[in-house]
Amino acid sequence: MRRLRKAERRRIVLLALLVPAVVAVFASCAEAEDSRLMDEDASASLPEASAPDADVLPEANVVDGGCDASEPDCVSEVISCDEAAWCPVPTTVSTRFLLTSVWGSSPTDVWAAGSGGSIVHWDGAAWKETPTGVKNTFRAIWGSGPNDVWAVAMTDVIMHSTGYANGAASWELVAPATSPEIASAAQAIWGTSAGDVRIGVRARNTSVPGRGYVYFDQYTLHTEADGGIRWDAVEGEGDVLGFWGSSPTDLWLVADNGDRKPWEKGQTLHGVADRGVFTWTKVDSQSTVALLSIWGSSADDIWAVGNAGTMRRMKKGATRWEIIASPTKQTLRGVWGTAADDVWAVGESGTILHFDGTSWKPSVAALPLGKKPDLYGVWGSSKNDVWIVGDGVSLHYTGPKPGARGGRK
Image (tube, rainbow, N blue to C red):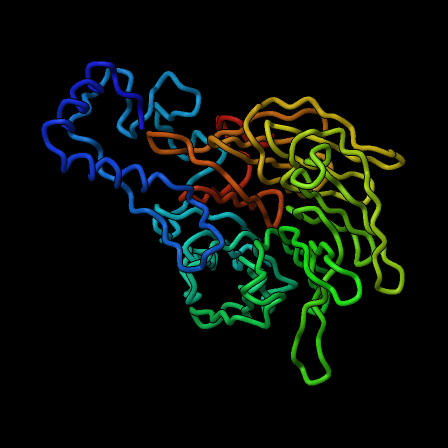
């Protein structure tokens, strides 16, 4: 919402003094200005979109979407999909919700998950909603294939689907990793097969008989002899935000351990497995802010991105992450690519960046008038089929277009 002019603020104060009921209205509107990401209470609900204040007078530089055209995060000119590298695709998800994560097994089997219990599926023609029966925010979605898909919200809200078939899909709550009383946010998921699945969570100290309180920040899937499952806790004190691995025995993670050790907000760890047991080693990220996403083209070339536009790169033989000059100060929330010279990073205020093997350059999406949406996740089936999801939006890249602004060449 734009700032009110001094005269407008004075008029609102006078109205509030004359009509006490107005105070309640403004209090209600203030309460509605909540984060789009739901809290850990599964019963929480997201605010409805509020109507514009009839007493707020328009200004010449305010566009129809309600933002100041002079601000860099405001779309004041609508361009067509022919002019932009990225084109918006309707998802049927309420604009009150956001999509936080995207993953797929093919161009016609793509999943996106987000707040309000939303999970949608792309079949190659349209996004379709798949009911989950919960209202939590799903923070990550991943699968080992079209018939094995996972979505996580909390350590006690973990859902599984056998895939999309005959125009529908069903989701079921599986065995929780923790009880509701000690549940924490599940923020990342990764695996290599249906039997090798790992969840990254907000670290929580738990009482362990004979050991006192121990921090756990991951849970791994274990299949019982009777076909049932359980989740085995993995010790760690960082709030895990992302995984990337080159194989079942080589895994990286980014975590925020700032609550416990302020100098470890940009924590990165490298895990190497021997007989199924990982040994984790801290690697200096040279970052004082949280790194929110990680991806690599190979074990020898890995990227991590995060707050304030932070970019880091790990190459073969390095003992710490390389500091990469970033073209933005906007928080970057997702990174993904197809090769060392084809990497995408996305973030707040509609930020889309592409790395061509030499430098990072901005890319453009065809967005409606108004404030640019925050973008959270990126994934593709190939270099010419890439999806971005975010604050009430999904964007599709289908390859270079003649004359498009900011596309991959």
